[in-house]
Length: 338
Image (cartoon, rainbow, N blue to C red):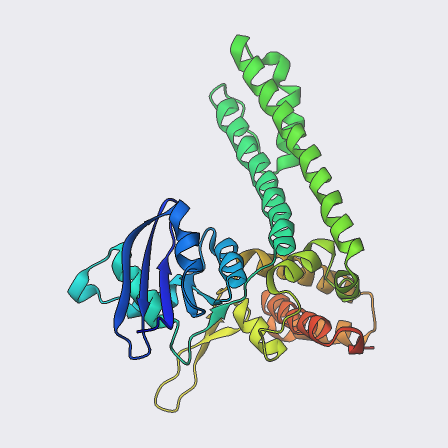
């Protein structure tokens, strides 16, 4: 029988492949396929539907398999887990491949868009920058911990730690002086790297017309604009801006039953990096709104007075997400609100 659906459990070196025909009968069972043989195996198959979990290397394999004429779909692992027959076969690579093969054919399954090489490259810039942002904080905390062993207790603020640690440097004995000095030098090196990657992101934003259009929105800078475009492209996978806002976890979770609607805290689902960028931009919008009379500024100010600071911040971030979708989806047809 002809193979119509294939599920692949991705890994680093050994993969599991599960293929079924039109009736759902397994006709291709490969529980252990070496990495070097996976591409030739898939290339030898007739055009079919291939499902994979969205994990490390998934976008690379999806682009490669698409060149062989296959239709490739990526899914979040949490949506595949319910289709695993745990009670019968347990957790193994072959069972995972079978679950992927089953999940990819479901009518209501939600798929992950396949990223291009350029999108992945731009996201690497953001991931590297975020790592350089986190490492100075860890190094500064290490400096505080080491200095406390010598009776020097510094406050939490990073700038104060740098200044006071430098002042106490000459008073430290022997190797302690060397270690703290090296750590302070490392923090300065991270600052240079962050500045360098900020320049990279500004260059990416300047070269992309969609990013330049996004940056016209209040609270959206080069980092947020390029991160959004690298992650969701032009937003064609969302039917409207509310879906993007919900995907980012900026909407309240619902706990309704018996006709009673209960809305709780925001879900915080989706990409935490994008959500944090939108929230930081919303804080800047709310600060600047106090001195402006634009309709959006008046709305933000009155919302903060009625509902509190953090609810207003989340609401502004959600509104910005919806407007970002409109910019990406409509392109030049989008008109910035007055």
